[in-house]
Image (cartoon, rainbow, N blue to C red):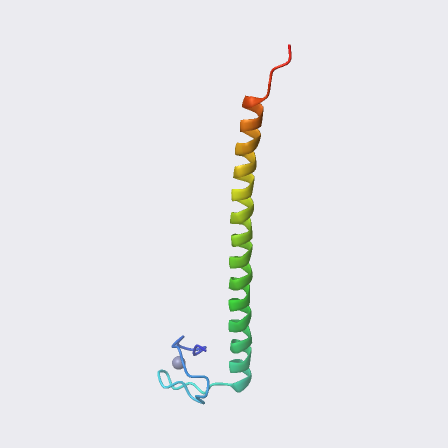
Length: 78
Ligand SMILES: [Zn+2]
């Protein structure tokens, strides 16, 4: 977690920030831990979504290539 006052990274079992000396509220610590967890979760979800988009995009690319190949090799009816 980070000190809400000075932003220094702290061990979660501190009662006081060793950097600025502010008393660390346990509720605030809990809230920060929850916030951190959600931030990490969001990062994971976002990373997963990006991977899906990338694989979808590459699938679309290969479909486009196949379609182009099909169109250029299709016999022209006159
Ligand atoms: Zn501090």
